[in-house]
Amino acid sequence: MVLPRTPEPELMDGVDQVEAYAAADFEASDQAMVERLADFCGGRVGAQLVDLGCGPGNISFRLARRWPEARVLGLDGAPRMLAVAEERLAAEPALAGRLRFEQALLPLPEPTPLAGCFTTVVSKSLLHHLHDPLALWRTVAQLAAPGALVLVQDLRRPPSADAVEALVAASMVDAPEVLRRDYRASLHAAFTPEEVVEQLRQAGLAGLEVVSLDEAHLEVRGRLP
Image (spheres, rainbow, N blue to C red):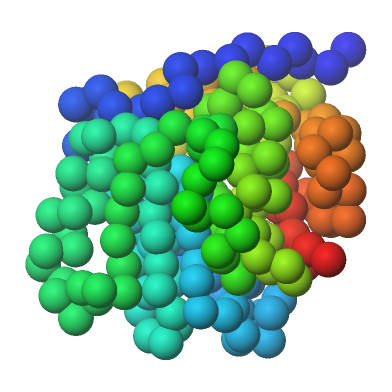
């Protein structure tokens, strides 16, 4: 029997959550995602990048530093998370004008001036938060320019509650309780690779590839027509 999905709150905007995630060290996994993007596209991401569900901007900043010729937009629905991102941006003036953040909930309204603007669309750890996963995939299709690159990484739901607890115990040994709590909830809220394949089919993005990275993570990647 497959572990049923248990949705969690869509926004992470509690004071304890924002403080914990802003202080947490995700450098290795965040940088690894940026390097996977570089390998996947041969280093050519185009002129306009968007980071969906950017949180405090971890990936957005890395994209802007890695590709100084590109402009990067970080979108998130949580005001406190974006406040941290803006504070970080103020401390890194060299990125001013190339990196910006906006508050937005998915799906974006139609019409939007952002439609078809982005040569690369990335997202990390947003999908499992959404009550309607098609909100992400329809936004990807909405914002992507023809031929755009897509790279989405997220959690994958384990097969059982025992497997969830094993992952929490193994991955969160020294983490504060708020991170352990949220990680457990996120694993229960995550999707299986098979469910993501079906989501992409429904959104008209069946050409994107879904791969399992490890027992707790999956990746969606590809180039749109």
